[in-house]
Amino acid sequence: MTIHSTMTDVYACRALLRGGSRTFHAASKLLPRKVADPAIALYAFCRLADDAVDFGSNRAAAVQRLRKRLERAYRGQPMNLAADRAFADVIARFAIPRELPEALLEGLAWDAEGHRYETLSELYAYAARVAGAVGAMMTLVMGQRAPEIVARACDLGIAMQLTNIARDVGEDARAGRLYLPLAWLRESGIDPDRWMADPLFTPEIAMIVQRLLDAADVMYDRATLGIANLPLSCRPGIYAARALYAEIGREVERGGLDSVSRRAVVSTNRKLTVLARTLALLETGWTPAKNSDAGAQLDEARFLIEAVAATPVRQPEHKGRAKPIEDRVVWVIDLFARLERRDQLQRTGSFR
Image 1 (cartoon, one colour):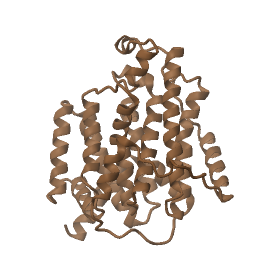
Image 2: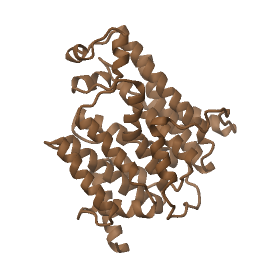
Image 3: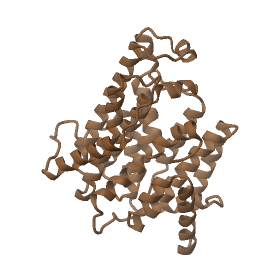
Image 4: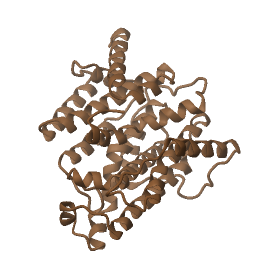
């Protein structure tokens, strides 16, 4: 692929995001081009993958088509689409193992099938695919491949996905989707099918939502313990992104854990307060206390970490002047914007 054609494809991906995902497009302009361009290509492919499954008349067939597109990209013969060509260039330059995007497609397939999850472990496995895999891919684009760093990216993505599920219980149920562990429902005396037929908020549902938020907090804490292993210039942004997203869970709690009849929204003022508090803490030189969990790997995400470790590096890590803290905060938040995207589409039919 020539430089000219690669840049033309990236410009097309930018236009795609400019018209749809305006926040990510704006945030990408704050990045060095050598990081922004591959991030845009990766995000564009993930967005189109979501669209193909969410809006296709035959969702299972859409997943199969995506798998064929992925196979062609890894053969170096992408389909004649800008996003596919740009994606093929990124996976080659940054040595992104095929297992990562394949995991994402597997998670999309589970969504297409209306998959339900019996245990928290099964829900972790889903979150690792639709969120942990994306976090791992973005970490590689950032030039970081160490297992402890990839593991923390997976933890953070999984935590964010669990937070989304806890926040959107009612909306998911009304759309025919159920992500709460079935075993938890039955332990609380709730028949999953009967509840789905008439999803109401009850004290039992509140307890389940709290359990899910508690599980997310464990993952947030694990991610926090590993952030100190990141390059110094990346730490403030990751800390802030973790704090801001975890605040959604706190808002659910402030709303009495009722995510059935209401949807928790963190106000702009609240976000600014959390951001200011986090950055002020970091300015004091604070780092999280280390313990035995700092290098732990979640079993359900281990295949992603091992896939990265087994893939030879073809691209040197990025070097250069660090971006301002505020720029990195915006970028990290938007790298995980796809966690929000599908919910926004289902509610409004358009992007924010």
